Length: 472
Image (cartoon, rainbow, N blue to C red; front, top):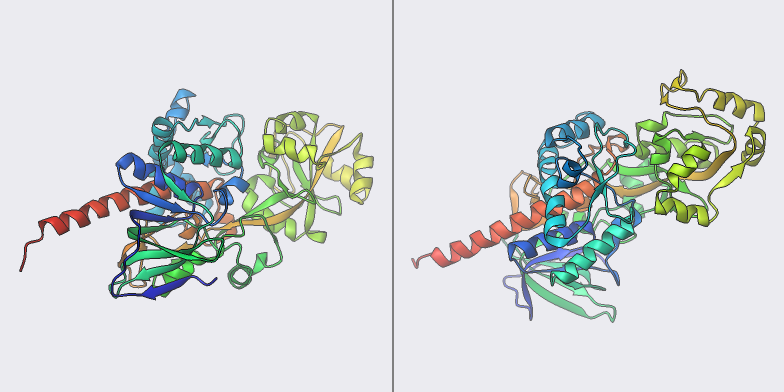
């Protein structure tokens, strides 16, 4: 089903809403919850039978500064420091406008979800993800993306938010002034239904599930396993471009270098940050694992067979078992244990002498080979997980301003079309190495929060303009 823009002079539908939100992931539900708090009605249209999206497939960790949860745990942070960390990871190539907007909005967005909708945040303070200066990664008690989506969905139900599931949006109805008057969506029986609205928020993520776009725009990931949601088919970009919208940062994306095979499970990069290493089929390390899990996906895919082994010891195994996703992967048989280096080498199929030499370099201090700093050596028994590199979601898309309004080629805004989360450009610049841990959910939650405020403000302004207009 091709995303279509249909030009109409007027549009009448049986149901009207102030804001139509396309996509029921973290971005769409955050926007809907924010609109409910602002007293603005909305309808969320979700293509699946239940809202999950890419969020449910992620770790569910959200970076945010100066939150109530941070203060409760005695952590000092600021939007300015967060913005500095984002740009440092992106080598200064992230959109300055969005970096500032998102770093300032994410704290209030997280506090609002906690205060008004009962989402219980805790800050993970036992490790630092790559590029973050302080502990600012927030999680719900489940410590999973599925748990985060469950909490947001329950909050939406409690707030009376209308979420239409199995409703795949196919058409935007737009007048000659480029104002979206309504949308068309297809139900499971193939019936086209319509909804009129005052504004539309595209919260339907990026194009990672569109193999042709990935092949064209992200050639280094053309053969990579896609671990995101298949509904991320580039619809937002297709609609926008039909309206003359600008796109940006199309080379940016989140990869991951720790996707367990054949189990198909995400292994938390916290394991790497605490001292685990990646070993290729030759028994060698091949990068500094603490630089970031996104670019690690490319490094792993470049190894023989496109795979590697995450190697760690009992101390790190106990740490990893504090993450439910890891425990599930372990139960599925992802973790293999070995009494010594020789038996691990036999399992990998590499020279025992080579592997012994490699692991001997994992000592407290700086590794001369990659420059990585280690806090501990690895002690037998050893454990290993076979992993590959994967594409999770794209970070480029429709260009937007600080209010999440979609920009035309010339820089002007489309009248009432908003985009946020993966549907829009993110704050990772235009390359895989620009992705700071958590940037995806940062864009989703901060973007959804900002877009809701924009929709509420512009909607109120439209009403004011109508009621104060005098006859000619």
